[in-house]
Amino acid sequence: MPEHRHAPRIRFLIGGVQKGGTSALARFLGAHPGVRLPRGKEAHVFDAQDYDEAADADAVNARFAPHFDAMPAEALHGDATPITLFLPAVIARVARYNPAMRWIVLLREPAERALSHYRMERGRGWEQLPLWVALLREKSRLRTDNDPLAEASHHRRHSYLARGDYAAQLDALYAHFPQDQVLLLKSTALRTQPETCLQAVCRFLALPPPPAGIDYAPVFVGPQPAPARHSFTLRLLRWLLRRERRALRLRYGIDFDD
Image (tube, rainbow, N blue to C red; front, side):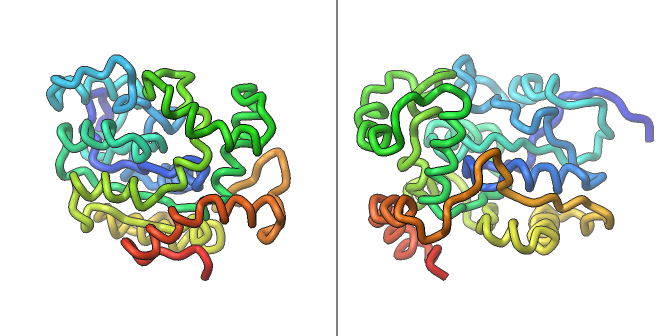
């Protein structure tokens, strides 16, 4: 069938979490011939500052169209912008656009995620403060953030601990979408069993099995080595996130101590 450009209907999201393996999963899933993801992985349509809250689905489709190459009309189109899960207003936008949206959510141990996030922002030059000073200032930064959707907002750049409050994010997600439209995966599973995870994603999206020969490159490879799992830094971060971890365990039965 000849390929042509059209305004795609987005039917699934790799919606989070940041530093949880979304790039790796998007790369693996993008190798499936029935799937199309945006060039550069993240379209940042739903979290755009100039998003029109009154836009209908056709208008949103038109905003997505430039992010995709020519494609067969029957391909399954998705997006992989991790901040989508973090901001409740963005989840509400998705719900208005497509109530049948299917969500894939990767959950990484929140202390490891926070440290990885901090290192990323330091590397990009967005964070000048030492780690513990940045964590002490996080709540005041977020509280005074007048526009969380701004390109350089504290919510985007400096939400190290807040993004680990997975229970609150899932509460917001399930307020708009039924649980059978959400696939929760642990990042450790993607790291250790990438092919099994991709098979689960394909079943969730009603796709044929993934093709053979996908390069399951290592996940979470960065410029700096990860700290030992039981290092002092991670132990203290886990203590700071103890209430969030407990809420996730009690409300959703998800535990990172296994």
